[in-house]
Image (tube, rainbow, N blue to C red; front, side, top):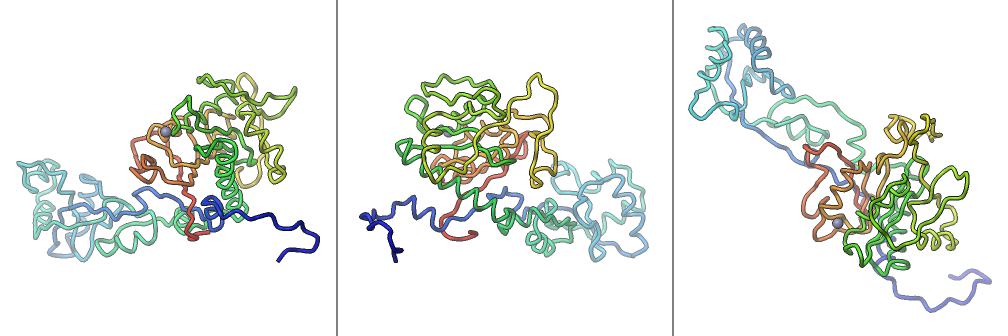
Length: 367
Ligand SMILES: [Zn+2]
Protein backbone atom coordinates (compact mmCIF):
# COMPACT_ATOMS: atom_id res chain seq x y z
CA UNK A 1 0.00 0.00 0.00
CA UNK A 2 1.26 3.50 -0.78
CA UNK A 3 2.42 5.55 2.13
CA UNK A 4 0.77 8.86 2.90
CA UNK A 5 1.94 11.76 0.78
CA UNK A 6 3.72 9.68 -1.82
CA UNK A 7 3.10 10.75 -5.38
CA UNK A 8 0.36 8.93 -7.27
CA UNK A 9 1.73 5.75 -8.70
CA UNK A 10 3.04 6.16 -12.19
CA UNK A 11 1.86 3.56 -14.60
CA UNK A 12 3.91 0.52 -13.68
CA UNK A 13 5.85 -1.19 -16.37
CA UNK A 14 5.58 -4.90 -16.53
CA UNK A 15 8.56 -6.43 -14.84
CA UNK A 16 11.45 -6.82 -17.20
CA UNK A 17 13.47 -10.05 -17.15
CA UNK A 18 16.20 -8.04 -15.44
CA UNK A 19 13.95 -7.23 -12.48
CA UNK A 20 13.05 -10.87 -12.07
CA UNK A 21 16.70 -11.77 -12.08
CA UNK A 22 17.25 -9.36 -9.22
CA UNK A 23 14.37 -10.61 -7.09
CA UNK A 24 15.63 -14.04 -6.20
CA UNK A 25 19.29 -13.95 -7.03
CA UNK A 26 21.79 -16.31 -5.47
CA UNK A 27 25.50 -16.91 -5.98
CA UNK A 28 26.81 -20.37 -6.84
CA UNK A 29 30.46 -21.35 -6.88
CA UNK A 30 31.29 -23.12 -10.14
CA UNK A 31 33.59 -25.75 -8.73
CA UNK A 32 36.16 -27.53 -10.84
CA UNK A 33 35.80 -31.23 -11.61
CA UNK A 34 37.98 -32.17 -8.67
CA UNK A 35 35.14 -31.13 -6.37
CA UNK A 36 32.44 -32.99 -8.21
CA UNK A 37 33.71 -36.25 -9.60
CA UNK A 38 34.68 -39.48 -7.90
CA UNK A 39 37.52 -40.46 -10.22
CA UNK A 40 38.69 -44.05 -9.89
CA UNK A 41 41.82 -45.82 -11.15
CA UNK A 42 42.55 -49.51 -11.55
CA UNK A 43 45.22 -50.82 -9.25
CA UNK A 44 46.79 -54.24 -8.72
CA UNK A 45 46.31 -55.58 -5.24
CA UNK A 46 47.48 -58.78 -3.55
CA UNK A 47 46.37 -60.61 -0.44
CA UNK A 48 48.88 -61.33 2.30
CA UNK A 49 48.95 -64.87 3.63
CA UNK A 50 50.07 -63.91 7.11
CA UNK A 51 50.16 -60.75 9.21
CA UNK A 52 53.87 -61.26 9.72
CA UNK A 53 54.49 -60.32 6.08
CA UNK A 54 52.98 -56.89 6.57
CA UNK A 55 55.92 -54.95 7.90
CA UNK A 56 58.47 -55.94 5.25
CA UNK A 57 55.93 -55.63 2.41
CA UNK A 58 54.91 -52.11 3.42
CA UNK A 59 58.48 -51.04 4.03
CA UNK A 60 59.69 -52.13 0.59
CA UNK A 61 56.61 -50.85 -1.20
CA UNK A 62 56.92 -47.39 0.32
CA UNK A 63 60.56 -47.22 -0.75
CA UNK A 64 60.27 -48.69 -4.22
CA UNK A 65 56.73 -47.83 -5.33
CA UNK A 66 55.89 -44.78 -3.23
CA UNK A 67 52.88 -43.60 -5.25
CA UNK A 68 49.24 -43.94 -4.10
CA UNK A 69 50.01 -41.91 -1.02
CA UNK A 70 46.46 -40.60 -0.80
CA UNK A 71 45.29 -44.15 -0.09
CA UNK A 72 45.60 -46.50 2.80
CA UNK A 73 48.02 -49.05 1.44
CA UNK A 74 46.58 -52.03 3.33
CA UNK A 75 42.92 -52.84 3.85
CA UNK A 76 41.72 -56.21 5.19
CA UNK A 77 45.06 -57.88 4.40
CA UNK A 78 44.78 -56.60 0.84
CA UNK A 79 47.73 -54.51 -0.26
CA UNK A 80 47.78 -51.98 -3.09
CA UNK A 81 50.79 -52.53 -5.35
CA UNK A 82 50.66 -50.13 -8.32
CA UNK A 83 48.27 -48.75 -10.94
CA UNK A 84 47.65 -51.07 -13.87
CA UNK A 85 48.60 -48.19 -16.19
CA UNK A 86 52.16 -48.29 -14.90
CA UNK A 87 52.76 -51.74 -16.30
CA UNK A 88 53.82 -52.03 -19.94
CA UNK A 89 51.77 -54.01 -22.49
CA UNK A 90 54.32 -56.78 -22.89
CA UNK A 91 55.04 -57.06 -19.19
CA UNK A 92 53.56 -59.07 -16.34
CA UNK A 93 53.17 -57.67 -12.85
CA UNK A 94 55.93 -59.97 -11.66
CA UNK A 95 58.33 -58.78 -14.38
CA UNK A 96 57.46 -55.21 -13.55
CA UNK A 97 58.19 -55.74 -9.86
CA UNK A 98 61.46 -57.46 -10.62
CA UNK A 99 62.72 -54.21 -12.15
CA UNK A 100 62.46 -52.60 -8.73
CA UNK A 101 64.64 -55.23 -7.06
CA UNK A 102 62.19 -56.38 -4.41
CA UNK A 103 63.52 -59.02 -2.06
CA UNK A 104 62.47 -62.57 -2.95
CA UNK A 105 60.30 -62.82 0.14
CA UNK A 106 58.34 -59.64 -0.60
CA UNK A 107 58.09 -60.40 -4.30
CA UNK A 108 56.47 -63.70 -3.49
CA UNK A 109 54.03 -62.02 -1.11
CA UNK A 110 53.10 -59.38 -3.72
CA UNK A 111 52.33 -62.01 -6.33
CA UNK A 112 49.87 -63.93 -4.18
CA UNK A 113 46.19 -63.72 -5.11
CA UNK A 114 46.62 -60.70 -7.28
CA UNK A 115 43.51 -58.92 -8.48
CA UNK A 116 42.61 -55.56 -9.96
CA UNK A 117 40.63 -53.18 -7.74
CA UNK A 118 39.18 -49.74 -8.44
CA UNK A 119 40.33 -47.11 -5.98
CA UNK A 120 40.05 -43.30 -5.72
CA UNK A 121 42.39 -41.59 -8.18
CA UNK A 122 43.14 -38.68 -5.83
CA UNK A 123 42.44 -37.29 -2.41
CA UNK A 124 38.87 -36.02 -1.94
CA UNK A 125 38.32 -32.27 -1.64
CA UNK A 126 34.97 -32.48 0.12
CA UNK A 127 33.53 -34.65 2.85
CA UNK A 128 30.76 -35.87 0.58
CA UNK A 129 33.38 -37.17 -1.87
CA UNK A 130 35.32 -38.72 0.98
CA UNK A 131 32.30 -40.69 2.11
CA UNK A 132 31.69 -42.01 -1.39
CA UNK A 133 35.35 -42.80 -2.00
CA UNK A 134 35.56 -44.75 1.24
CA UNK A 135 33.11 -47.24 -0.22
CA UNK A 136 35.74 -48.11 -2.81
CA UNK A 137 38.90 -48.04 -0.71
CA UNK A 138 40.01 -46.22 2.46
CA UNK A 139 41.68 -42.94 1.56
CA UNK A 140 43.19 -39.97 3.35
CA UNK A 141 41.24 -36.74 3.70
CA UNK A 142 42.15 -33.32 5.03
CA UNK A 143 38.88 -31.48 5.72
CA UNK A 144 39.01 -27.93 4.39
CA UNK A 145 36.54 -25.45 5.78
CA UNK A 146 36.82 -23.07 2.81
CA UNK A 147 36.20 -25.84 0.25
CA UNK A 148 33.11 -26.97 2.14
CA UNK A 149 31.86 -23.39 2.35
CA UNK A 150 32.21 -22.97 -1.42
CA UNK A 151 30.00 -25.97 -1.88
CA UNK A 152 27.32 -25.04 0.62
CA UNK A 153 27.35 -21.35 -0.26
CA UNK A 154 28.49 -20.07 3.14
CA UNK A 155 31.79 -18.68 1.83
CA UNK A 156 30.61 -15.07 1.65
CA UNK A 157 29.62 -12.93 4.59
CA UNK A 158 26.25 -11.20 4.37
CA UNK A 159 27.84 -7.89 3.42
CA UNK A 160 30.03 -9.51 0.76
CA UNK A 161 27.01 -11.26 -0.67
CA UNK A 162 25.06 -8.01 -0.77
CA UNK A 163 27.93 -6.32 -2.60
CA UNK A 164 28.32 -9.09 -5.20
CA UNK A 165 24.61 -9.10 -5.91
CA UNK A 166 24.63 -5.35 -6.20
CA UNK A 167 27.33 -5.61 -8.85
CA UNK A 168 25.18 -8.13 -10.72
CA UNK A 169 22.26 -5.72 -10.64
CA UNK A 170 24.55 -2.94 -11.75
CA UNK A 171 25.68 -4.98 -14.77
CA UNK A 172 22.09 -5.43 -15.88
CA UNK A 173 21.32 -1.77 -15.33
CA UNK A 174 24.40 -0.41 -17.09
CA UNK A 175 23.78 -2.72 -20.02
CA UNK A 176 20.19 -1.52 -20.32
CA UNK A 177 20.66 2.17 -19.63
CA UNK A 178 24.11 2.92 -21.03
CA UNK A 179 25.10 0.21 -23.48
CA UNK A 180 22.02 -0.61 -25.58
CA UNK A 181 21.50 -4.00 -23.87
CA UNK A 182 24.95 -5.19 -24.87
CA UNK A 183 27.26 -7.05 -22.48
CA UNK A 184 29.03 -5.10 -19.77
CA UNK A 185 31.84 -5.96 -17.35
CA UNK A 186 33.01 -4.39 -14.10
CA UNK A 187 36.37 -4.86 -12.41
CA UNK A 188 36.57 -4.29 -8.66
CA UNK A 189 39.41 -4.08 -6.17
CA UNK A 190 37.81 -6.15 -3.40
CA UNK A 191 40.04 -4.74 -0.66
CA UNK A 192 37.96 -1.61 -0.42
CA UNK A 193 35.19 -2.57 -2.84
CA UNK A 194 36.32 0.06 -5.33
CA UNK A 195 35.27 -0.05 -8.97
CA UNK A 196 38.50 0.03 -10.98
CA UNK A 197 37.10 -0.22 -14.46
CA UNK A 198 33.93 -0.69 -16.47
CA UNK A 199 33.71 -1.82 -20.09
CA UNK A 200 30.81 -2.37 -22.44
CA UNK A 201 30.83 -4.34 -25.66
CA UNK A 202 30.96 -2.01 -28.65
CA UNK A 203 30.44 -2.26 -32.40
CA UNK A 204 34.06 -1.53 -33.11
CA UNK A 205 35.42 -4.36 -31.00
CA UNK A 206 33.42 -7.57 -31.44
CA UNK A 207 30.15 -7.33 -29.56
CA UNK A 208 30.78 -10.42 -27.47
CA UNK A 209 34.15 -9.59 -26.14
CA UNK A 210 33.71 -6.81 -23.61
CA UNK A 211 36.05 -8.77 -21.33
CA UNK A 212 38.97 -7.97 -23.63
CA UNK A 213 38.11 -4.29 -23.34
CA UNK A 214 37.79 -4.60 -19.58
CA UNK A 215 41.28 -6.10 -19.27
CA UNK A 216 42.61 -3.28 -21.43
CA UNK A 217 40.83 -0.59 -19.44
CA UNK A 218 42.26 -2.03 -16.22
CA UNK A 219 45.69 -1.69 -17.85
CA UNK A 220 44.86 1.99 -18.47
CA UNK A 221 44.60 2.44 -14.72
CA UNK A 222 48.20 1.21 -14.59
CA UNK A 223 49.40 3.56 -17.32
CA UNK A 224 49.13 0.80 -19.91
CA UNK A 225 46.41 -0.27 -22.33
CA UNK A 226 46.98 -1.34 -25.90
CA UNK A 227 43.63 -0.80 -27.62
CA UNK A 228 42.71 2.44 -29.24
CA UNK A 229 39.35 3.57 -27.96
CA UNK A 230 37.04 6.31 -29.13
CA UNK A 231 35.63 6.64 -25.63
CA UNK A 232 36.64 9.41 -23.31
CA UNK A 233 37.91 8.35 -19.92
CA UNK A 234 37.76 10.01 -16.54
CA UNK A 235 40.85 12.05 -15.76
CA UNK A 236 42.51 12.11 -12.39
CA UNK A 237 42.57 15.21 -10.27
CA UNK A 238 45.90 16.45 -9.07
CA UNK A 239 47.20 14.62 -6.01
CA UNK A 240 44.45 12.00 -6.25
CA UNK A 241 45.20 8.93 -4.15
CA UNK A 242 43.50 6.51 -6.47
CA UNK A 243 43.15 6.61 -10.23
CA UNK A 244 39.95 6.75 -12.25
CA UNK A 245 41.70 6.34 -15.59
CA UNK A 246 40.21 2.88 -16.17
CA UNK A 247 36.67 4.27 -16.20
CA UNK A 248 34.96 5.48 -19.37
CA UNK A 249 33.18 8.75 -18.68
CA UNK A 250 29.80 7.54 -19.91
CA UNK A 251 29.52 4.90 -17.16
CA UNK A 252 31.13 6.99 -14.46
CA UNK A 253 28.90 10.00 -15.11
CA UNK A 254 25.79 7.82 -15.22
CA UNK A 255 26.59 6.36 -11.80
CA UNK A 256 27.66 9.67 -10.28
CA UNK A 257 24.43 11.32 -11.39
CA UNK A 258 22.24 8.48 -10.15
CA UNK A 259 21.14 8.91 -6.57
CA UNK A 260 21.00 5.18 -5.90
CA UNK A 261 24.75 4.85 -6.49
CA UNK A 262 26.14 7.72 -4.46
CA UNK A 263 27.79 5.34 -2.02
CA UNK A 264 29.75 3.41 -4.65
CA UNK A 265 33.52 3.72 -4.41
CA UNK A 266 35.66 4.21 -7.50
CA UNK A 267 39.32 4.11 -8.38
CA UNK A 268 42.34 1.84 -8.50
CA UNK A 269 45.38 1.98 -6.33
CA UNK A 270 48.05 3.94 -8.18
CA UNK A 271 50.65 1.88 -9.97
CA UNK A 272 53.72 1.55 -7.77
CA UNK A 273 56.14 1.57 -10.69
CA UNK A 274 59.31 3.28 -9.55
CA UNK A 275 57.88 3.96 -6.12
CA UNK A 276 59.04 2.46 -2.87
CA UNK A 277 56.80 -0.29 -1.56
CA UNK A 278 54.01 1.27 0.35
CA UNK A 279 51.72 -0.26 2.89
CA UNK A 280 48.12 -0.25 1.80
CA UNK A 281 45.47 0.16 4.42
CA UNK A 282 43.48 -3.03 4.48
CA UNK A 283 40.32 -4.13 6.11
CA UNK A 284 40.73 -7.21 8.25
CA UNK A 285 39.05 -9.42 5.70
CA UNK A 286 41.74 -9.01 3.04
CA UNK A 287 44.74 -8.43 5.24
CA UNK A 288 45.11 -12.14 5.79
CA UNK A 289 47.06 -14.13 3.27
CA UNK A 290 49.01 -11.08 2.15
CA UNK A 291 48.16 -11.54 -1.52
CA UNK A 292 50.25 -10.14 -4.30
CA UNK A 293 48.07 -7.11 -4.85
CA UNK A 294 48.82 -5.99 -1.31
CA UNK A 295 52.48 -6.84 -1.55
CA UNK A 296 53.36 -5.43 -4.94
CA UNK A 297 50.52 -3.11 -5.90
CA UNK A 298 48.36 -3.31 -9.01
CA UNK A 299 49.58 -5.58 -11.78
CA UNK A 300 47.09 -6.44 -14.53
CA UNK A 301 44.02 -7.90 -12.74
CA UNK A 302 45.98 -9.47 -9.86
CA UNK A 303 43.73 -9.66 -6.80
CA UNK A 304 40.81 -8.06 -8.64
CA UNK A 305 37.28 -9.38 -8.96
CA UNK A 306 35.56 -9.33 -12.34
CA UNK A 307 31.80 -9.13 -12.79
CA UNK A 308 30.36 -9.94 -16.21
CA UNK A 309 26.85 -9.81 -17.56
CA UNK A 310 27.61 -12.73 -19.90
CA UNK A 311 29.74 -15.80 -19.32
CA UNK A 312 33.00 -15.13 -21.19
CA UNK A 313 34.12 -17.05 -24.27
CA UNK A 314 37.38 -19.00 -24.34
CA UNK A 315 39.49 -16.09 -25.57
CA UNK A 316 38.13 -13.77 -22.89
CA UNK A 317 38.43 -16.42 -20.18
CA UNK A 318 42.07 -16.92 -21.15
CA UNK A 319 42.61 -13.16 -21.03
CA UNK A 320 41.58 -13.27 -17.37
CA UNK A 321 44.00 -16.15 -16.76
CA UNK A 322 46.83 -14.16 -18.34
CA UNK A 323 45.88 -11.06 -16.38
CA UNK A 324 45.69 -13.00 -13.09
CA UNK A 325 42.10 -12.15 -12.08
CA UNK A 326 41.16 -13.42 -8.62
CA UNK A 327 37.50 -14.26 -9.11
CA UNK A 328 35.05 -14.12 -12.00
CA UNK A 329 31.34 -13.60 -11.34
CA UNK A 330 28.89 -13.81 -14.20
CA UNK A 331 25.18 -13.44 -14.52
CA UNK A 332 24.05 -15.15 -17.72
CA UNK A 333 25.46 -18.23 -19.48
CA UNK A 334 26.62 -17.81 -23.08
CA UNK A 335 26.37 -20.33 -25.92
CA UNK A 336 30.12 -20.17 -26.35
CA UNK A 337 30.89 -19.72 -22.65
CA UNK A 338 34.13 -21.27 -21.40
CA UNK A 339 33.45 -21.38 -17.64
CA UNK A 340 30.29 -23.49 -17.45
CA UNK A 341 28.61 -23.96 -20.81
CA UNK A 342 31.26 -25.40 -23.14
CA UNK A 343 33.87 -26.30 -20.55
CA UNK A 344 35.45 -25.17 -17.32
CA UNK A 345 38.65 -23.35 -18.10
CA UNK A 346 39.41 -22.96 -14.40
CA UNK A 347 39.48 -26.78 -14.09
CA UNK A 348 42.48 -27.06 -16.40
CA UNK A 349 45.32 -28.01 -14.09
CA UNK A 350 48.05 -27.22 -16.61
CA UNK A 351 47.30 -23.49 -16.57
CA UNK A 352 49.66 -21.45 -14.46
CA UNK A 353 46.91 -19.35 -12.87
CA UNK A 354 43.47 -20.31 -11.61
CA UNK A 355 40.67 -17.96 -10.64
CA UNK A 356 37.52 -18.88 -8.78
CA UNK A 357 34.26 -18.75 -10.71
CA UNK A 358 30.83 -17.82 -9.40
CA UNK A 359 27.55 -17.70 -11.24
CA UNK A 360 24.62 -15.60 -10.14
CA UNK A 361 21.60 -17.83 -10.01
CA UNK A 362 18.05 -16.67 -10.43
CA UNK A 363 16.16 -19.70 -9.19
CA UNK A 364 16.25 -18.67 -5.57
CA UNK A 365 18.70 -21.33 -4.45
CA UNK A 366 21.61 -20.29 -2.25
CA UNK A 367 20.44 -16.74 -1.80
ZN1 LIG B 1 35.00 -13.16 -25.67
